[in-house]
Image (cartoon, rainbow, N blue to C red):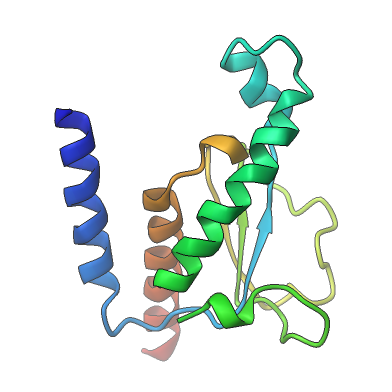
Length: 137
Protein backbone atom coordinates (compact mmCIF):
# COMPACT_ATOMS: atom_id res chain seq x y z
CA UNK A 1 0.00 0.00 0.00
CA UNK A 2 2.70 2.49 1.02
CA UNK A 3 4.89 1.28 -1.87
CA UNK A 4 2.02 1.89 -4.33
CA UNK A 5 1.57 5.44 -3.01
CA UNK A 6 5.31 6.13 -3.29
CA UNK A 7 5.30 4.76 -6.85
CA UNK A 8 2.36 6.98 -7.87
CA UNK A 9 3.97 10.05 -6.30
CA UNK A 10 7.29 9.37 -8.01
CA UNK A 11 5.52 8.82 -11.34
CA UNK A 12 3.81 12.22 -11.00
CA UNK A 13 7.14 13.83 -10.11
CA UNK A 14 8.78 12.41 -13.23
CA UNK A 15 5.85 13.52 -15.40
CA UNK A 16 6.15 17.07 -13.99
CA UNK A 17 9.89 17.08 -14.73
CA UNK A 18 9.17 16.11 -18.32
CA UNK A 19 6.57 18.86 -18.87
CA UNK A 20 7.98 21.07 -21.62
CA UNK A 21 11.13 18.94 -21.98
CA UNK A 22 12.29 17.82 -25.42
CA UNK A 23 10.86 14.33 -25.93
CA UNK A 24 11.70 11.76 -28.59
CA UNK A 25 9.42 11.54 -31.58
CA UNK A 26 10.21 7.87 -32.08
CA UNK A 27 11.24 5.26 -29.50
CA UNK A 28 12.76 1.85 -30.20
CA UNK A 29 12.63 -0.84 -27.51
CA UNK A 30 14.87 -3.90 -27.22
CA UNK A 31 12.58 -6.08 -25.10
CA UNK A 32 15.11 -8.35 -23.47
CA UNK A 33 15.09 -10.55 -20.37
CA UNK A 34 11.79 -12.42 -20.75
CA UNK A 35 13.12 -15.89 -19.89
CA UNK A 36 15.40 -14.59 -17.12
CA UNK A 37 12.43 -12.72 -15.62
CA UNK A 38 10.32 -15.92 -15.73
CA UNK A 39 13.05 -17.87 -13.93
CA UNK A 40 13.44 -15.08 -11.35
CA UNK A 41 9.67 -15.11 -10.77
CA UNK A 42 9.71 -18.90 -10.31
CA UNK A 43 7.46 -19.66 -13.28
CA UNK A 44 7.27 -23.29 -14.37
CA UNK A 45 8.59 -22.59 -17.86
CA UNK A 46 11.01 -19.83 -18.86
CA UNK A 47 9.05 -19.54 -22.11
CA UNK A 48 6.16 -18.05 -20.12
CA UNK A 49 8.31 -14.93 -19.87
CA UNK A 50 7.64 -14.29 -23.56
CA UNK A 51 3.89 -14.50 -22.93
CA UNK A 52 4.08 -11.95 -20.12
CA UNK A 53 6.46 -9.82 -22.16
CA UNK A 54 4.01 -9.72 -25.08
CA UNK A 55 1.18 -8.72 -22.75
CA UNK A 56 3.39 -6.01 -21.26
CA UNK A 57 3.60 -4.21 -24.62
CA UNK A 58 0.07 -2.86 -24.08
CA UNK A 59 1.20 -1.11 -20.87
CA UNK A 60 4.13 0.53 -22.64
CA UNK A 61 1.90 1.72 -25.48
CA UNK A 62 -0.33 3.45 -22.89
CA UNK A 63 2.74 5.12 -21.35
CA UNK A 64 3.79 6.35 -24.79
CA UNK A 65 0.32 7.72 -25.34
CA UNK A 66 0.40 9.51 -21.99
CA UNK A 67 3.85 11.01 -22.75
CA UNK A 68 3.09 12.90 -27.40
CA UNK A 69 4.93 10.01 -28.84
CA UNK A 70 2.36 7.13 -29.41
CA UNK A 71 1.81 8.17 -33.00
CA UNK A 72 5.52 7.67 -33.72
CA UNK A 73 6.03 4.10 -32.59
CA UNK A 74 7.97 1.77 -34.88
CA UNK A 75 6.07 1.00 -38.05
CA UNK A 76 7.01 1.06 -41.70
CA UNK A 77 7.78 4.54 -42.97
CA UNK A 78 8.47 6.04 -39.55
CA UNK A 79 11.52 8.19 -38.83
CA UNK A 80 14.70 6.84 -37.26
CA UNK A 81 14.42 6.39 -33.49
CA UNK A 82 15.47 9.32 -31.32
CA UNK A 83 15.72 7.03 -28.30
CA UNK A 84 16.50 3.31 -28.03
CA UNK A 85 15.75 1.63 -24.68
CA UNK A 86 17.40 -1.70 -23.87
CA UNK A 87 16.05 -3.71 -20.94
CA UNK A 88 17.71 -6.53 -18.95
CA UNK A 89 20.95 -4.76 -18.07
CA UNK A 90 22.69 -5.75 -21.30
CA UNK A 91 24.90 -2.92 -22.58
CA UNK A 92 24.73 -3.61 -26.29
CA UNK A 93 22.42 -2.90 -29.19
CA UNK A 94 22.25 -6.50 -30.51
CA UNK A 95 22.20 -5.19 -34.08
CA UNK A 96 18.87 -3.47 -33.39
CA UNK A 97 18.21 -1.02 -36.21
CA UNK A 98 21.95 -0.44 -36.60
CA UNK A 99 21.69 1.99 -39.47
CA UNK A 100 18.60 3.77 -38.18
CA UNK A 101 19.81 4.18 -34.59
CA UNK A 102 23.31 5.50 -35.31
CA UNK A 103 22.32 8.97 -34.02
CA UNK A 104 19.86 7.72 -31.39
CA UNK A 105 20.21 8.32 -27.68
CA UNK A 106 20.74 4.92 -26.01
CA UNK A 107 19.30 4.08 -22.60
CA UNK A 108 20.08 0.86 -20.76
CA UNK A 109 17.78 -0.32 -17.97
CA UNK A 110 18.52 -3.17 -15.54
CA UNK A 111 14.88 -4.34 -15.40
CA UNK A 112 13.93 -7.39 -17.44
CA UNK A 113 11.32 -6.57 -20.06
CA UNK A 114 8.22 -7.97 -18.25
CA UNK A 115 9.25 -6.00 -15.11
CA UNK A 116 9.86 -2.72 -17.00
CA UNK A 117 7.74 -0.09 -15.24
CA UNK A 118 6.37 3.28 -16.19
CA UNK A 119 8.94 4.97 -13.95
CA UNK A 120 11.69 3.15 -15.88
CA UNK A 121 10.19 4.53 -19.10
CA UNK A 122 9.92 8.04 -17.65
CA UNK A 123 13.53 7.88 -16.43
CA UNK A 124 14.59 7.02 -19.99
CA UNK A 125 12.66 10.06 -21.26
CA UNK A 126 14.26 12.23 -18.57
CA UNK A 127 17.69 10.98 -19.62
CA UNK A 128 16.86 11.74 -23.26
CA UNK A 129 15.68 15.26 -22.40
CA UNK A 130 18.85 15.96 -20.39
CA UNK A 131 21.04 14.76 -23.28
CA UNK A 132 19.14 16.99 -25.73
CA UNK A 133 19.58 19.98 -23.42
CA UNK A 134 23.33 19.30 -23.19
CA UNK A 135 23.60 19.20 -26.97
CA UNK A 136 21.77 22.51 -27.27
CA UNK A 137 24.29 24.29 -25.02
